[in-house]
Image (spheres, rainbow, N blue to C red):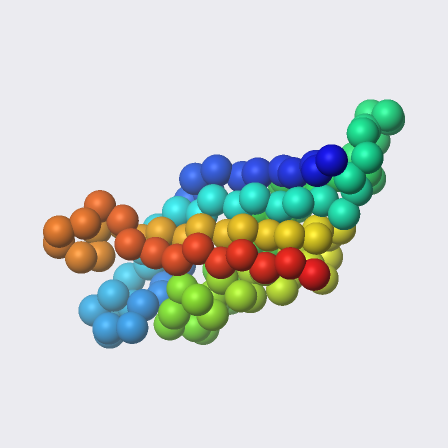
Length: 117
C-alpha cells in the first residue's frame, strides 16, 4: 500500500540559468511534484497531521525560489528535495522542473529528480 500527494504545474518565478541573458530577468519555472508519504496504511481519521499540507510545501518551494542563488535546475531541485525531506514525512520524492521556450525548437526543457530515504 502506498499513499502519495502531488502538486501539478506549480508556477514559480525565479532568476536562474547558465547564460547571463537568461538570468537578466525572472522567468517562470513549472514544477510537478509527487511525494510518497511515510504513512502507508489507510486514512482512518480526517486529520491533516497524517498527511502533508500542500500549501506548506508550495510555500516552502516559493521561499527557496525567492532566495535562489543557483544557476542550475539540478541544484535548485536538490534544495527543494532536501527541504521537503527535512520538514515533512516523505519517503520518496519525484520532482519535475521545466523551463518554457528556452531553446527555440522546444516548448519545454528541464529535469526530473527522484530521491528516496
